[in-house]
Length: 407
Image (tube, rainbow, N blue to C red; front, side, top):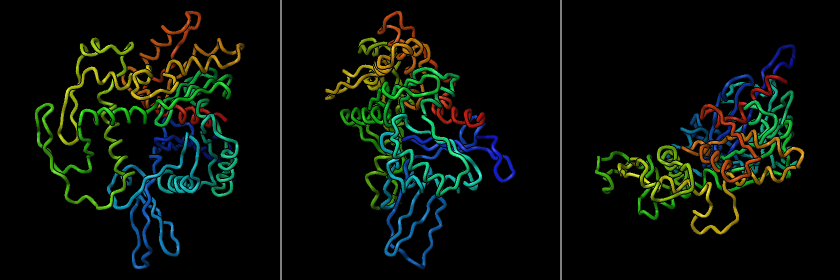
């Protein structure tokens, strides 16, 4: 794909990897994507005024007879407070659900980030392992008929993650924003009937954090509301001033997104998964973490910073949750158990860990311990963990970059 000759000249392939957190795009053969665009798209319904032209560099305009929908892309665009701006994503359960928004995103990436003609570059596109045939056909139709690409290759993101880590066979544990999945891969092919999915992922932990702060009566104040703040002692009420130029009519979807972004910072800075099952006495003896919120309120966290992410591995810690949902180690063992006996023994030696949610401190160490202690001694598990956080976050894209440069 990378070495194809089209119109008398050799052209580099593009690699697209779509996730609930972001859309990664770049050129085959490179180490990391050229662009990483949030999968959320903002839009504002506006009445047409022929005397006024929109000049926002982060927006595209789509006209109609009575109103127009202005689309806003990229982190600076969607994080700027704007009246009546709703945030939507084109994905549902890892699959493309809103094709109009998907087209707008592709238009934006081609024009603003890659700055090239789509007809001149073949494309490798990742997809969820459980993607439906109708959606695959529709994506192929879109890429060929609208963007006129010369060649197209659609491949499961779990296979790409395995390739990125030098494996053609193994179990890919992918814990991202929307869900966690264990996908067995054998000789470069996904074993469909053995895929195991769980809702315990990044959004779940974010909601656990939100619930924790509600119980503690700690008000979450996002960055955009704060004009200034004063230094206060630990656990004292925050003293801060609200910005006076905040636009009216901010939507609930945008406000929730900004609170979620604040909680993402908290997760990265404060949370840690314990080496073993949660024990409050042991957790209390561990060093505390001091955390300051955007409005100046600050506190020390001890056992609670271990208790919140514990639900990923011990589902009995989830309040009001009566489902039979499985923890991280159970997902891996269940997926292997669903495979045929002939290939089952080749999988435990390559458990590939990927996805942004696995970057929580202590995640891989706890997973390794649970797989070692809670499974038969005959099943020798070995975790394959990318060296850097960038490699773990972008594993499918990196695998696509490697594959597209070889084809």
